[in-house]
Length: 173
Image 1 (spheres, rainbow, N blue to C red):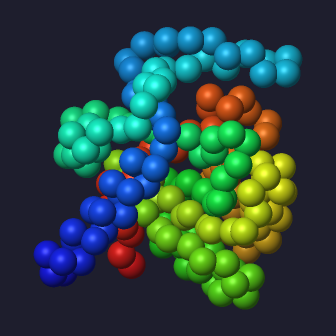
Image 2 (image 1 turned 60 degrees about the horizontal axis):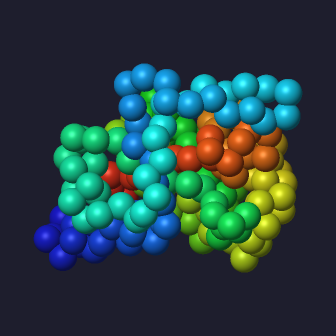
């Protein structure tokens, strides 16, 4: 891989991080309780109310801290995110690629410290329509492979839990 392609991939990661108006840092202890519907969620994520800095993103890439980004802001987003663990990811990725080739949506595959992320770009922006779209794709995938992924945005969990780890690199298969 050339230095230029590595730099471009890093620029994509930095762009993803810096486009967010705020971010979360994972803490070792519970920092809050969120009530959503009739459920309580405990969180270990502390919100930082400004964009990640280049230094904090660099530290994340070097695995010195854990940065998480919101899936959506102001009830809008341009993507559905599927998150799958590293184990068994090849089957998952190949199945999603095959499915998306028929649907026709653009996507990017990233890896984080502990998982694989597939960002599916769409012209839908409302959280409800993105949630429905993600569920439809998930149902199609479930007909082919056993469900072992998470979908975001998820309207069944609170806004503060609709977060994903900042990727550390683009996935190359």
